[in-house]
Image (cartoon, rainbow, N blue to C red; front, top):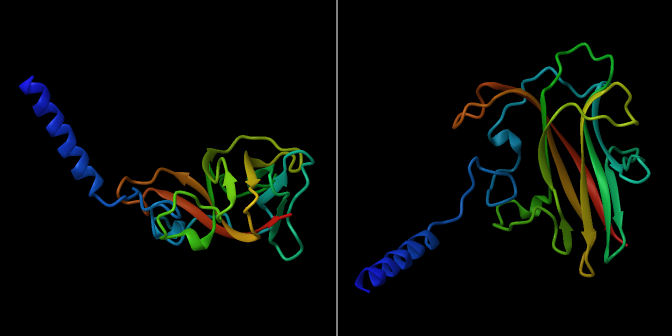
Length: 202
């Protein structure tokens, strides 16, 4: 009986200590429990994959495979309130690129206003999302870009009844190699890109 009481006291004391430690993320994540403004806080943009005719950074409607990109380079994502919409994030290099191929792509959709706020969501209030970030090895296929070396992954978004129009930054990196733990700017090459995604709750 005494041992049981001691065990409970130790467990309670441990819980108190852990609850007093500020939440932190490692590495210092962008948007969730972190104050890093973008990927370049940890990584460098030093790779061979420039903003050129071979770069693919697109957002497609999953059903129609139509690009959501507008002439100004931004993406427009419209969702009726109370409904969902699934899009495909496509990243990589077009067929015919002579540069060495990236190995792994990473991306994050984040509302800049959520950075440093401590929120567990990277989207504006009233919006729900199942996969706002990912890191994926190249090797997927999408009919819009035949022969390209890309990653493709779906993301489903819901505009709740309280959703308002908003804006996201799509932060993306093409990478190759492995970062050194605790020294993310070593051991990996990559190139960083940003795009604006406008959210419209219809």
